Image 1 (spheres, rainbow, N blue to C red):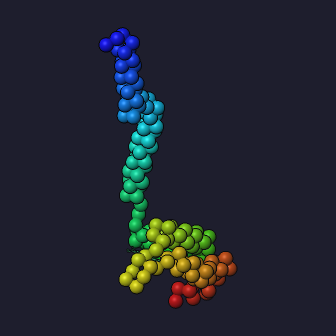
Image 2 (image 1 turned 180 degrees about the horizontal axis):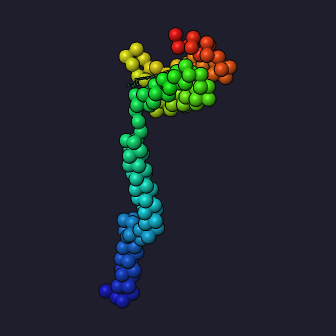
Image 3 (image 1 turned 135 degrees about the vertical axis):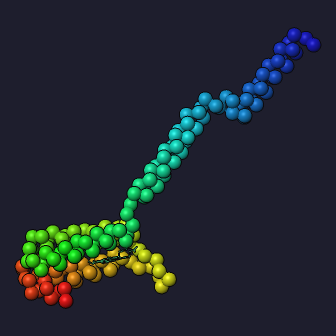
Length: 151
Ligand code: HEM
């Protein structure tokens, strides 16, 4: 084989190697590495956030627990009204309202065999009727009107 032919064969061989290397990603590796690292970082961050959400969910009270708080504030509202302590009654009415809203946020819909129950709608109805009438009795310092709501 002549020197020229040997050189030509060697050149073609290295060209074939270069093509194979590119196709198999060796040459492209340095380009892909930052992208692969970013994807891995993002995956790890999402996994950490999911774990954090699960941890926080475990700290939330259930609706029954929040309702017991509602009952506590609503009972104290009744005693404050009976004692005609109107600022205290106003305080417990606010607490009742805010805890009821919290209860609905904890679980906005209850699933039953008869269908879904929209708790926000029920709360809205109670807020516009009973709670608003109680607010008016407290604002007017009207013991008779307040007492009538308890009967
Ligand atoms: C001032 C009015 C209210 C009082 C005093 C009150 C009080 C209570 C009490 C004592 C419980 C039982 C908690 C337990 O021992 O497990 C309860 C349960 C419940 N209440 Fe209320 N409630 C009131 C208004 C409402 C309203 C307006 C809604 C709907 C928006 C509601 C939805 C519920 C639900 C869904 C439960 C069942 C919770 C569970 O067991 O998971 N309540 N409530």
